Length: 359
Image (cartoon, rainbow, N blue to C red; front, side, top):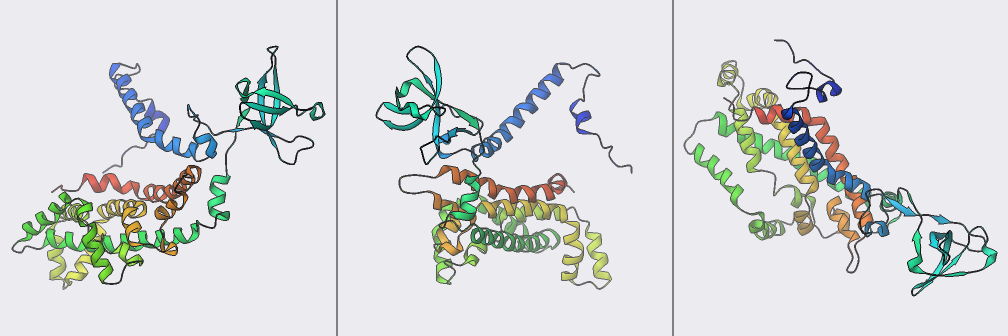
């Protein structure tokens, strides 16, 4: 069977349903796709752009798309750089002056080119800040290097450990359950499957307290195992893998048994390799869930050296102020691993989901 023809992006974007000319169907299709692209990626682009804004730039109204910062100039006789403003003078002319200080509605200004001329008093309504597009790299560098209350390396290590171990355990447990429910015939099999699926209707808030009491009683409070184990088996994963494994012919398993293969050998050497697309889909879902999980780690963990990245971001929230510029920057950093995992496994998503439930 011949493989599918590969086409370039430019050719794909220039495809027409009605030949060489664009008809109404093409226009509506491209309009719909453009709107969907903006709807999906617009918030992400806004997040990335806002992560480079200063704390003052984040509270501007109307909010600018690009990260603008006020221009600072060095003025002779002053130790620190002064903010630059465009001032409308009484005669209607405009001058660029640096602000020394502000007293009420009056600003004390000085000419950067001629500071010896003395101070100029200006009403604050007569001045507009001179701004330029500038990336606030300190939003990323300060939490990673300078801030003592945000141990990025420790939080990253905890998140990687929790996500990796939890995903591995989830794949093993769910694949075993899917294998048993799809390839073994026993009394009550369908009832057990329905029971698993019915747990999706139970809100997570209902079981938080009972699960926390169990975790505390076995000594897993302030322990990463208390974050990893409770969500190891998921009804969504069992459903996904069971439906996919139903598509694997039973004749393969019967042939392996005739050749003397044990059930563990069949599971490890036949079922798992054939179920790789579904396992990849479940791995993506598990990584995204575990990496972004905030509520359960916040409940179980109270020691700073055990925090995951999502819980660690809570350090930027004070009683009176939230350091949004740091929160946004670190949120972008936490998105990078998920993006890499998705890019690596995305080729399995369509295959895994499309073939689930097909017999």
